[in-house]
Length: 229
Image (cartoon, rainbow, N blue to C red; front, side):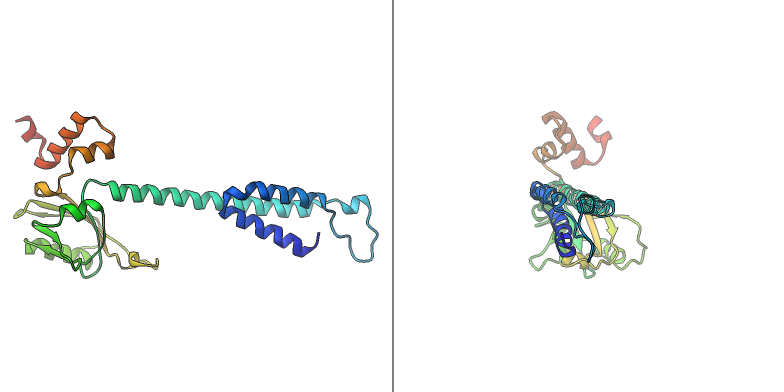
């Protein structure tokens, strides 16, 4: 087999790493590769020993296979991680917002679309945020501008009983809108509009109906003592 054929086989190995369903075809190709004798050195006479694959040739192939398998495992681990994060993002029972430097909403989960359609914190049609508490708005603006540093911060509005958990995000070179995200915000407390329903809590956390009702009430009142009293 020529060097060109070897290069084609190595290329197929890495292509197969992207499509695990084709591993069977690759095994057949490798089997054929082992059955074809190596090209003897120019001017020499081929013998049975010369025709065998050399340990160096086999070692090169094994190294490429090992890299391909590790690369495939790494990519699939990233895919699984992305899927889990997307499931959490879409099923999270609290509003979650991704904001740009102008406090515009780049992305938000389904709960945010529903819960923040009106009230003290509202997503407007132009994807900007409207606050009834100006002080809360200014506090969030300071978080986005990194005036208070890069640490996670909890903002509270006594006026509207709204709490925002804010996570500043470093600039990214990733393609798309993700590169514009400056802060991720979770609306953890507020009016009943941001309280997840018992049904949603039950589906997300896989708890019983009674447990989901208790958790729903706790989210709504925000104080265990009030439940006991």
